[in-house]
Amino acid sequence: MLSKLSDSQKWFLLAVLATGGWLVYLLSPVLTPFLVSALLAYLGDPLVDRLEAYKFSRTFGVLVVFLVMFLIGLIFLLVMIPLLEKQIAVLMIKVPLMIDKFQEGILPRIARFAGFETPTLDTSAFKRAIIANWESLSGTVGGVFGTITHSGLKILNWLAFVLLIPVVTFYLLRDWDVLVGKIQDLLPRKIEPTVSRLAKECDDVLAQFFRGQLSVMMALAVIYTVGLMIVGLDLAFLIGILSGLVSFVPYLGFIVGIVIASLSAVMQFHDFIHVIYVAIVFGIGQALEGMVLSPLLVGDRIGLHPVAVIFAVMAGGQLFGFFGVLLALPVAAVIMVILRHWKELYKESDFYTP
Image (cartoon, rainbow, N blue to C red):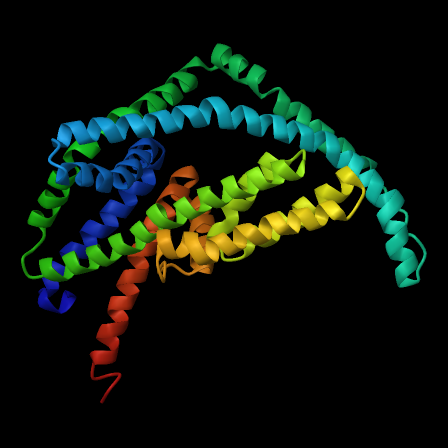
């Protein structure tokens, strides 16, 4: 691709990329709502295109998809967050009790089985830290109102960002295809076919992840949560959501979920029959993921290695904060596609095959 450009054009392209990266770094706090809106518009555009294929107008399709996304977000804020807060409250109450039971019941058995004396653990400091953290967390609402009083400008900025997201999302959804066409039209004609092909590959990778893997994660979260609720686990909602969220790494959601749920079942019911029930729940979820959800929603290959996904999210958060977390996967997809393209060029070069 770059071989078709002159040296001056290459330097100009490099300067544009460097300047763009520098501006993104400087404006990352301001760009966060726009990036969230762009991700939402990217997820919603195929649905709008499908409604257009059924002879509906673009505006009507955008309104339908926008209202659906808005209702989902509203339900999440009004239902999911209070439920998660209650589950965290239950967890903070149970953790000190679990520590005591482990120290008084399970640890002596392990020591007798291993043939050594039961160690004496000072867990009081750990329990005090948990209680202190929970008290600070439970006071978050009061802290928010205090912040409104003492730092009203920051709260107004935050509310402006939140209100800006649906507005920008609506306009991006309406003009998504037009914007993509204009960007393609601005590309230099020499490299436009190659850039379009690479952009299509990036879109395929991101579509598989965002529109496929995220659907699998949400489905698994529902399956695990409902199953653990049927078992009767107090922390069913929290464990189910956590297991679904980390399931983008193969088997990680299954391992994390079954370990935490099994420990919770032992501490809550004091028997092992409920551990078997927990194993059945996660076995069913794993079977559905392998045989139904992943083949149907993701396809044969997602394109991004799980380790690359983890590293991209952590690196993005370290460099740019929340904005970097949002930008991590799109950038990782672009880098992966470019590296794949360079690999093809390398294998076709005289350096690789003299």
